[in-house]
Every structure is written in C-alpha cells, then in structure tokens.
Length: 205
Length: 205
DNA sequence: TAGATTGTTAATCGATTAACAATC
DNA sequence: TAGATTGTTAATCGATTAACAATC
Image (cartoon, rainbow over all chains, first blue to last red; front, top):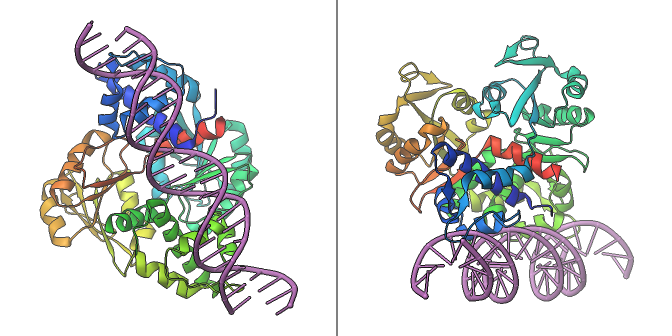
C-alpha cells in the first residue's frame, strides 16, 4: 500500500481514537457524516482518507465501528507499542511523565534523563530518572523509538545530539528553539509560544 | 495589507524569534540563506514570506536584523500583549503556569480556573486560581484573548462552553478530545498522543 | 564589472473540494 | 424502487518550488 501523507496519517489516528470512543458508547455503526460532526472535518475528506485502505463501508449503512477501527489500526500501528524516552524532568517533563495518555498500551514511557543530582535515581510515576550521560546505553537497552526534549532551550541542542548518538531517529521537541540534526532524523516541534501567538495573530487579521 | 495564511503567520513568528536570538549575538545583518540554515526552512520560502511586507532587504547584503524584526512585528503583533487564561491546574496546567515562555512581555497569563477547592484561592507563579464558575466575570474584567484548556478530556466540552460563554473566541485545547464550539470561535489543538503516534507512523512507512 | 542576494513571476506539486457514479 | 451513503474521478484551490530578473 502506498505511503500516506503526514496530514492524512494524523487524521486517521484521530479517526481511530474517535472510533474507540464510539465503541465505548456501544455505537457499532457510524457514517462518515457522523464522524464529520464529531471531528469537525468534512465527510468527503474522511471518506477519501478511509479509501486509502481496503474498503470496509457499506452504502446506505456506513461503517462497522469495530471493523473500521481495526482496518485503520492494522495498517498504521500494527499492534506496535511506541517506546518513549524523556529528556528533562522539570515542570513540563514531570507533567509529561504523568500524562494519562502515555499510559495506554499504545504508548509507553520507558526512561527519563536529567542532569539534576536530586532527580537522578528517583522514579516518577514508575519511570526511572537516569543521568544524561547514560542515555546511549539505557536507550539501546530499552529500544526506544522516540526521544522527547523537555529541557530549557539552552540545552536542547546538546540533548538532541545525545538522542541522535543513541541511535534514535525521531524527536519530539518541546523546547522553543530549532535543533540541528542529520537528515535521516525526523523532528517535530511543539512550541507553546508560537502556537499561542499564531492563534492570536491569525484570528486578529 | 492582505491577510496571510496561517502557515505563513507561524513561520513569520519563527523568524521574529530567530531574529531576536541573532540580535542577542550582535549579528546585525542576516541573509535568507543564513535564516534558512537556522530554521531549516528553504531560503526561497523565507524570502517569499518576507516579501509579504514592505521590502527591507538589500541585494548582495541581506537584511538588517533589527529592521526586519521590527517590520515583521509591526505587522503581526503591533505591540499587543496576548492575555491568556488557563483552565485546569493539574500537572499539565501547573507546568503551563510555570512555562518560562509565557512570562515575556508578549504573552501574559492573567488567571487560572479549577474546580478543586484545595487549589482555588492559591497563587501559582503569581497567577491566582479561581473557581470555574467565576470564569465569565473574571475573564471580562481582565480582557483575556485566549483560553487554554488543560483539564481531563471528560470535562473539556464543559470548559469550552464556559470559555465561549465568557466571550473569548480563541481556544488552545490540550485535552485529547474534540470540542464543539460556534463557528466564530477558533480552536487549535495540541494533542500529545496524536503527535507521538503520527511521528511514529510517519517515520515507519 | 562580476557576483551575490533580493524579490517576483511562472510552474509544479499536493491537498481539498465538487461532482457523480456505484451500491446497498 | 427510492433514497442514502460510499467511493472515485475531475476540478479547484493553495502552497511550495523553480526560474529569473532586478539591484546593490
């Protein structure tokens, strides 16, 4: 099957989560129209996205919630569990460690790193905090998929280098600063300030 | 001047921040090529973005850092301070209250709301926590621009309703769940789980 | 002048939307 | 059958990139 654009992937993941919610409410059938109302996306776009996979819908009826969810999941997630490691156990890092969404079966936070002697060795929410220097060793042992940067911006490049050095090639960067990495490494940024200002300016004009 | 696309706005805000950094390092001239290396965006795109404004660059030389920054800021931010109110003083909410980026002159967190009697009345990082019901009154008084939702997903719709009721029409939603709001209200979501899974799946295929 | 860099116009690319055929 | 909904093809829209002229 063809490689999907990033935006499509994100939407499909949203469908999966929405379908999970519907299943909990015992809604076993759902139309693209209904998914549209819940997600705010257009029904055409939703059908187009779904049509990337083996067809599962029935005209006049819609989709079987469970089947659609399974179809989408099988293609995107394949029963994988994503292993995360966290860099920086400050305010934001601690919040991430306690984030409820990271304690499902799909995502698992396996280790944290910091430079603060007071934090090292402790466990936060069941996750041990290691000294930064041990990152390469620990990461190789626990086969992490993604590194999360939640350190002050002054240290984010240093940490990014450690992550790359450890063989991880996917980074989620919360520091409000760009990082330089080899081309093969994928970086996504979650930049609170930029999101706030962008929302403000956009609605402004 | 014409309305800019959202993506352009976000990039321009990134340029502004990058230029600030360059000024701190006393680099008073900068070319689109150099900005490209720092931000990872193409130099053509950067020049295209900049060309939306009064031209300020000199062929062969580049841009005067301070002038370019001022030009971009004047158009986008106009010396405004963005006033935020926060809903939910849990782990994530507390981290947001302490987030260093929200204590510059451009962004100001002016009030927080929660339902927990133990938190109400306290000050976190100089910001007072009010009971949720007082949101409309407090918000009107402090002229908030943006409401941040950092409550469990079960309560996010309720909180969104409060925000809309208070007259705010811009929402940043951290809850991993869609919310329903009137069309005039702009919502942006920061959904950790979705970002993690999307990064994983995208790099996967 | 030569060369580097800006700024703009045209071409390309990708994503969204519209239209509609297929089907239950 | 009639009507609703899926799924696909074509049209539109917007954003990015390529090409190049302008200029210091």
